[in-house]
Image (tube, rainbow over all chains, first blue to last red; front, side, top):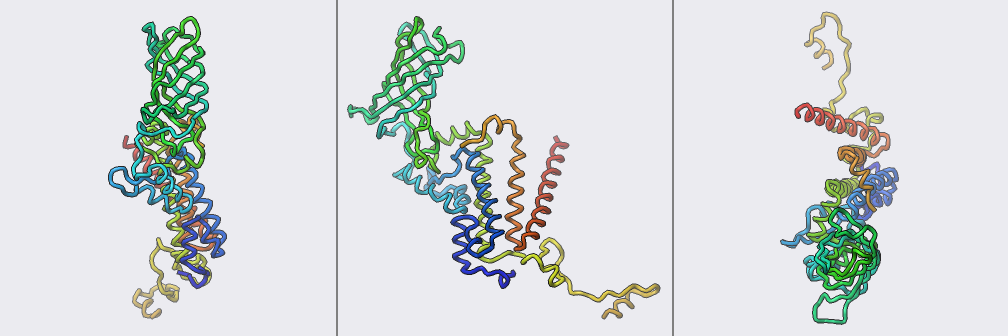
Length: 323
Length: 65
């Protein structure tokens, strides 16, 4: 180890900095090439995984059953500051140490925005059944009625879009107004998605000659209502994990692997900041003529004078000549 | 922020190996040596070796299937 040739300064501080921000420990030691290299490689791998996983792959879950760290987060936290907010976010998302049950989540304030979802199990008063995609302006707020914990009032004003033959004769683009009857479930406030999903039972009316009064289940998302603070490295609950796998497929796993590898690579970088390079400075070949840096080759051998072979000399003669 | 699903769907997942090969080779060899030329030279060698090994495994599995 060529520690004498590299000023590691305070190795413990350097290692701590290298953990906190990949590349920072080496910058502190003045090893700028490595600082840039580690920083570029580790950050790019980390953010590639983060983006590929739609921001849902970095989270710390106290295991839902046993209250342990998940192994994946143990690798991710090796990138330091970038992964640390996950611990705080888990505390916010599950104050009791367990993820909240969506069916028990209370609406704490007004929720409004553009809605995208579906009206399922539409049942018109004249007996027709239908299913529609629906979009429009949505608003919902806690109700003063405290009979039920999840009492809300709200409405959706928009248009329905037919998706198949199951349209009850209602043409595409028909205007619709619904009011919320009962909120079935609501995605947590702290959750890794900009959109907030909900399910509720509604009553409403569609315009036009084929319209009429109906009851239905409204399922979908209010788009872009969650702040970055409420979604950055927030934990997934069981439903969210299932949905993420469904949305992202195999890319969810690839994204996880990217973030894990970024963390594990930084572990190597932390050790380099603490101890210096493992095999050598890298120029030993030219300065000493030895090969201490070649870990894959045979161990170095003492230099031996070379004797030109002479015709008729035996091997024993050559050995005695060199000895 | 999410990768275009169409782009993602049309990419073979094997290609996602290549950025990892590059970063793993560079970071691993950077922890072994200090000189930039040596790091880059060794990284190139290691990267080629990994790709060759994976390619060989791919061919072997392809023939086996």
